Length: 373
Ligand SMILES: *Cc1c(COP(=O)(O)O)cnc(C)c1O
Image (cartoon, rainbow, N blue to C red):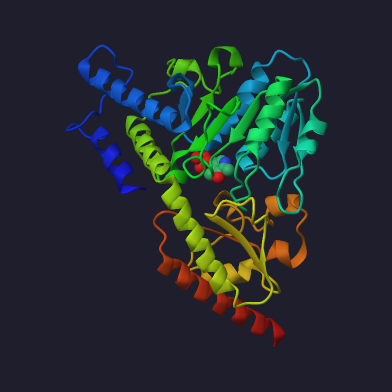
């Protein structure tokens, strides 16, 4: 976490600060907690250029994605319903859609090209009279490839179809101006921008008309759409982290761009390196690479004590299945089974990347030599 976010969070945990329940409006302590929550809501809204009333606090992007997709679909009056999403979404979108399929809802899973880019035509062609929601991610968590959500939003707005965006990997890293983007719902997650884990929010445009059905029922918090005692410390921690990320966006982006270049220069010493996903459409902080003749498993084992590298997303680790994202892009063979993902951020140094680059080069060369023997 950003030290600034830790400092913002701590006073809400002890009796030297504001630990009261924000729903306890009958006393000053509760009112102070509620004021802190509303300040945080305004800070989130300011960073996204939306109305504070459009922000619902959740436990993270997994919950936000489920609330958006299930909530809009079950709240929709159509008798037969259809959702359009992609085959390279995060599991919290894919598994939610699979569940809805088991309830009789139709789902189309769009495929990108082999650089991970989705063609606008494919979205248009998938829409039917029954389409109640399109849900697409902004930046892919495994490849870093970014979709043109502005153009997609314009198309869907013209057709009157709600558009949900999973912005967990872009919020705080890529400018998002909701005053200029006709997006209906947007998910984000605090721990992706140096905030606390277990915290996120869902932006809902025109909440009263959106027809969102809650996942949970309870004490009426968050307009009854997300009941439960508000975690004041998590909320203030997320808002501090997001404010900082928005202020530092250009600086942090440039820092990551330089780190990516440093890694590229180091890995250019090897032959047979594939950079997966469109490098033009990619954000700088995520890289996905394969090394000809080297399996990801062997490489991860060789480097597990020094480099926090993974195959696919962290959420899928432990499974040996190759990445569903790269598969959706049509990537096969060595390149699929050898793909590893690295990400870096504000606190990663050039020295870190230099060392990682050297260690990867050495491990790849050693593994290739072994395979040749
Ligand atoms: C991390 C992530 C999520 C899940 O967010 P949590 O807050 O960890 O539940 C969803 N979508 C994408 C693209 C992510 O990177």
